[in-house]
Length: 109
Image: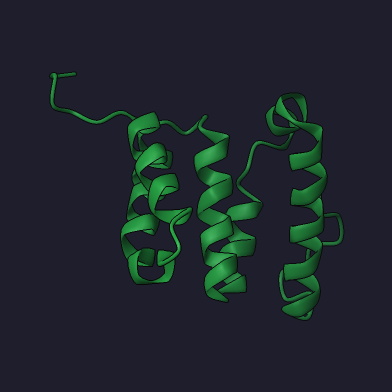
């Protein structure tokens, strides 16, 4: 890695900075790009994957939110912070319900 290359964590932080701003909706595409890049650079970055799902959820795109929630490494998330794991289950359930159980998946996790 050269000195100017950004890491997965760098992209995650850039995404979080914009996501936590009051005008995050105006930057939603940039936020999505940063979380996607973070997830691509490090497939084990479960927080980047989780925040990618959150931004889709907040934008109202529940189908993409659900797809991305289901990619989160639940075991690692559970070990990291149990409350985030519980919230993830809630968000998966909400999206699944709102989408009319389109995924056909009987067991969430």
